[in-house]
Amino acid sequence: MMAEHLNRQLEHLKDEVIYVGALVEAALAKAISALRTRDEQLAREVIAADSEIDGMEVAVEKDCLNILALLQPVALDLRFVVAVLKINNDLERIGDLAKNIAKRVLVIARVPAIEIPVEFTEMARLAQAMVKQSLDALVTADGSLARQVRGDDDAVDELRDAIEAQILAAIAECPDQTEILLKVASVARHLERLADMATHIAEEVIYMVEGSIVRHRAGA
Image (tube, rainbow, N blue to C red; front, top):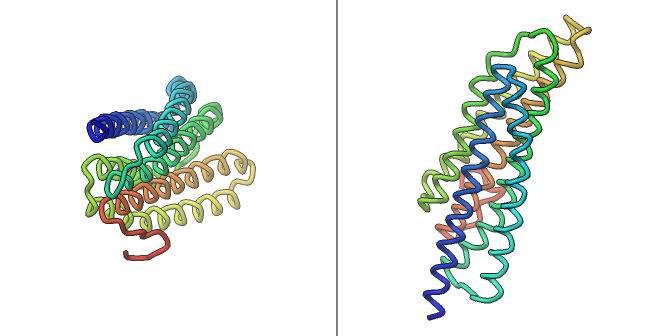
C-alpha cells in the first residue's frame, strides 16, 4: 500500500517538474525571439508568465519535502526526489533569467537598432538546446545526454568572451552607445548563466541515474 502511494506521488512529482520545464522552455524561447525581433509585447508576455513559474517552484518544493518526510523513499527513488528538489530551483532561476532578458528587450527595442555580434545567434541557440537536453535527460533518465550537456558549456563560455570583446570594441568606437551596448552585454551574461543552470540540471541527472556526484569534476 505504501509502495503504491509512493509510486503515485513520484509520478505526480515527475509530471510537475516536466510542466515547470515546459513553462521555462517556453519563456526562454519567447525571450530570445523577442530579443531577435525587438518585440516588446512578446517580452511583456515573458515577464507576466514568471509568476506561474514561481508558484510552481513552491508547489514542487512542498511535494518533494512531503515525500521525503512522509514516505521515506530509498535508493533510486530517493535520488530522484533529491535531484528534483535541486533542479526545481535551477528551473526557477532559468525563468528569472528569461524574465531579465525580456526586461532588457524593453530597453533595447526603444532605441535605434545597433549591430548585434553574430555570435549571439549561436550562443542563444546553444543555451536553449542545453536547457532542452538537460530536461530531456531528466525525463528519460539519460546519463549520456546529461554528460553531453556538460560538455557544451565551454562552447557557450567561448561565445560569451567573443561577444564581450566585440562590445568593448564597439564602446570604444561609439562611446555614445555605451548604455545600450552594456545592456546587450548583460544579455550575453544571462545566456551564459542559462547554460550554467542547464549544466547544474545535467549534473543532478547524472547523480540521479548513477549515484555519482560530478560537480566540480571536469570530464567526469
